[in-house]
Image (cartoon, rainbow, N blue to C red; front, side, top):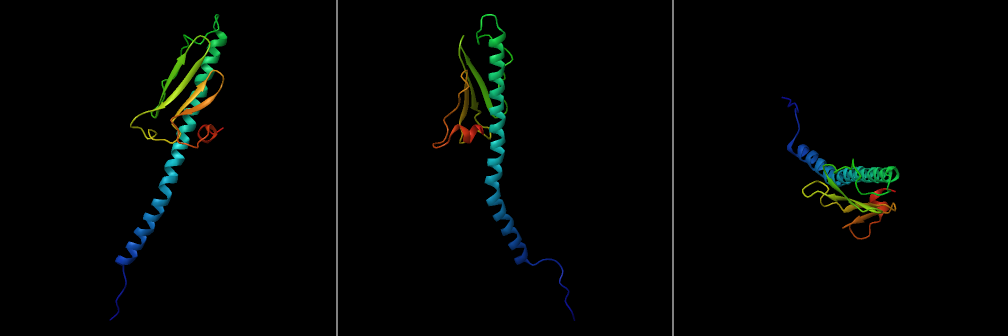
Length: 135
């Protein structure tokens, strides 16, 4: 009598599960960092857009001041954007939202000033603005 082999053995299934587990363990951190990098690029773009709005307001206002500017963004799902305006200076800060996926991001909070200086607050040691801003 011949026995026909149908299906998979338990050992074969366990080997496949182990391989899938290894691939996920290696790939997941890379995927999450890739997603965070995209979110950082988004907030960097929002801050640059805020700076352009403020500069446009400054140029178009009769008294050449930043105070009173309108149309500024409040942020997105991951960052809250706040603007500190005086007559001749501004600082726009994107603060990570507590409880969001970016709350523990290594790049911390993003800033941009009226001089065009880009910066980071509460970032991990050793990071440069180029690492987080992408430029």
